[in-house]
Amino acid sequence: MQTHPESLSILDFTYNLPEERIAHFPLSERDASKLLVYKDRKISHITFAQLGDEIPENALLVFNATKVIRARILMQRASGATVEIFCTDAADNSVDFVKLLETKNEVSIRAFIGNGKRWKENEELIQDLKIRELNIRLVAKRIGPAREQSIIKLSWTPTDFSFAEILEAIGKIPLPPYLNREEEMSDAERYQTIYAQHNGSVAAPTAGLHFTTKVLENLKAKKINFAEVTLHVGAGTFKPVKAEKMAGHDMHREQIIIPRSLIEQIIAQKSNPVIAVGTTALRTLESLYWFGKQIITQPGRHFASLFVGQWEPYNNTPDVPVQIALRAILDWMRENNRDEIKGYTQILIAPGYSFKIVNALITNFHQPQSTLLLLVSAFIGEESKLVYEYALKNDFRFLSYGDSSLLWRKE
Image 1 (cartoon, one colour):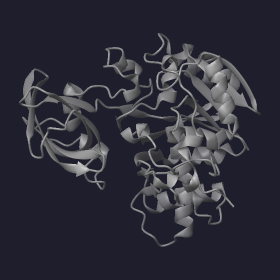
Image 2 (cartoon, rainbow, N blue to C red; image 1 turned 45 degrees about the horizontal axis):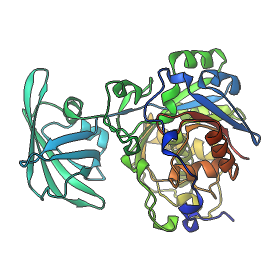
Image 3 (cartoon, rainbow, N blue to C red; image 1 turned 90 degrees about the horizontal axis):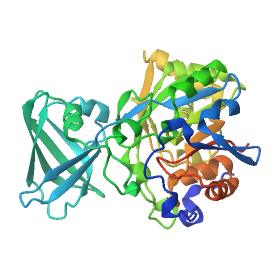
């Protein structure tokens, strides 16, 4: 029987991370970062530029093609105090955040508020900006609370600009809070993967920040296959675990988009490895299996979109073979005339989780006591402690702008 992660204490998943080991800025060259390789209980390291030496022919690399938006807005109260509005999602969970970015005139969003203790409900904040030499007036009104966030109504005149255009004009790059600095010009490029396409993330899928055109060309030359998914990373990725046990922690939901072609590629892989570029790609791929299982085990249910709950993998119901689950999704897509799946995942991957699709993971080094560290511990077991000890002893740089690792799953 699986161990249920509800009983886990996050205090058991920690390590000492000195401040000087946090990478506050990226290296001058993306692929110059170190790459720790963990395979068959052995640890070594090379540079990221040599990634192709560690990946076998016909492996499938799955990238997250999401693009970071300028989600932080700074506005002034009448007193002159600056208030930060960190936009994270639509106010209404039934509203697609990506479609909200295309909305004109006004939007209602969820946001973390910085320095907003005296910003009263319905008090308007006003900020002037320019788009293509046109003067725009942006108005923000705090409507009410939403757990640790607030509901904010944003409106602007003239109204013929999208919310995405407003953010691009006035917003700032949502750098992780632990960097503890303001953005610099280089962040606009470096806090974005070179293959980013689809607006919607408020944090970068940082495992992909190391890839360069040269690295991708080397991988192609080795007959390594590529595929893309989209998981729009939410601010919840930085949410600390404050509960004594994981049972008291609510995972954040994130939007995922998966093309039919990817499912067909995974089925065709057979014994060839599937490698997730980043924890976001891994969570997307593993969520795919659970959606297939839902289709099989709940016949007749109308699925408007994919949704995988936090504890769904741990309900001890009989497994469905992966290939059957994936083929069930393809059948469902044909019946519903869809070329891609859109939905949300809230999946928590922690020790006790049984991996279904991903064989290897490319990922950076994560914060102590984080759900991402839980994921790594689930993926390679107790050896995760040895991996982090090795990285600390060998001067690896940590967190978003830090070095990378290639972890082969513990079977």
